[in-house]
Image (tube, rainbow, N blue to C red):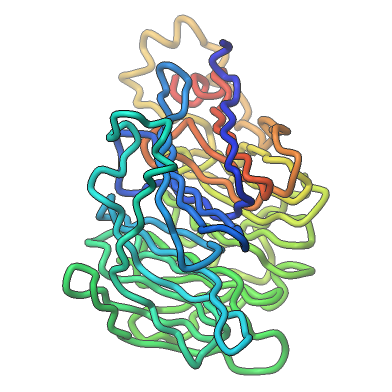
Length: 387
């Protein structure tokens, strides 16, 4: 099999929630949450065996409702948070809870993995992130570094900061803030910055992107019309402070410097329908993934606004033996931004794209029909970045 060939896994239910198991840095592992109205919903633990190009899976039951968002603890491999639908008083509410996976839930822990679905374990409920009285929860985002004890949930127009105590079995509301004003004041997504001692959070509501300081829960900046239509997703550059990416229903991906928000630093217009997801690569931030309901996943090389705008920077001492082979590189122009590859293995809207937390050259994408595709960065580009 060709090494760069995609590997496809099909879930029996529709799905839109995907996360890497953030605290797992050895095994390539993703968690997928299903959306079924008729049957018990599931979380599929997907292990990718890189050497043999195969997928191993395990299935956990998530019986409380269809999963709209899933996020994994950055500190504890066994802990995750889900946002799920539940019906009460003939109204549908999206609630949030923190769960623990069973000890032996890693794929391959069972003797006969094929019948793991028939003996599926249930998740253990640790605590509810109770936004009751405030509305529906759009997403839960974990503090990127630290002990996995602080999470933020976005509930309608409220931003709630929780402290998880007693081994995550109790969630205490530490502080909160609300959006005030006219118009559509429901949060659609949020992201916690890994910079500034994790005191900065960005949120999206309607066409606006806002920054918040978690210490005072006050707004630090606002990009009023960041997109022409609804903003769907945000991500912070992991290697460069103040750099934020956003995407939305205007089919665009925009890159911002949060100190100067009048104009985007760069705009991408490669998709032909709503862009649901944007993700920076954790190690090589010039690699940016986007997923859209045009059924395509696009990998872009945004090198001009990355932490390595001139490609790979090396010390003079390292150059000595390379100079003989490639003397022309001394006078080379800086690399140009470009689309590296368009992946078209999906036939339905791509609602989620995520980089692996264990392998920086590997990513997964999920479309609504339950198709999970694992792909790699093209080998030629990988070596160009590394060498």
